[in-house]
Length: 96
Image 1 (cartoon, rainbow, N blue to C red):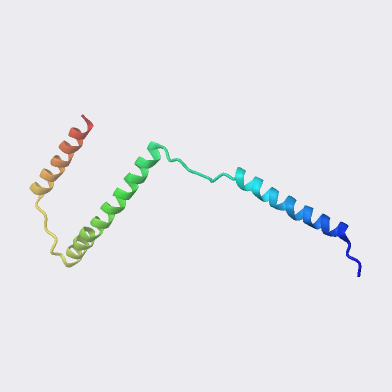
Image 2: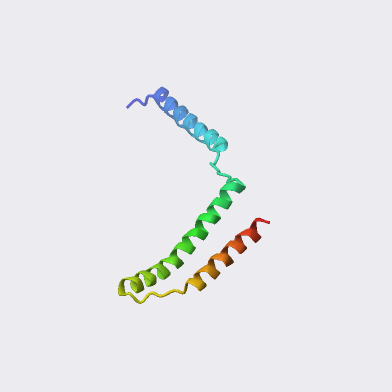
């Protein structure tokens, strides 16, 4: 039986070359990274805050809807005016 050593040597070279290519690509491989700007972090924080506020308001809205549909929702115009003024004053203070 005759073994073709030339074919064997070529096969070994191909395997070694492919391993070398894998090592070289592994050494030069970079990992993707993302860096968020300060503005995007603030937007994310604001969005998370709004989700929390919205979930809290859902309960209040449902309670008011229920009272409105049953005719039991009563609010004093003086209390409403006081609340509006309080909110306006708070916003003006924040802007200063």
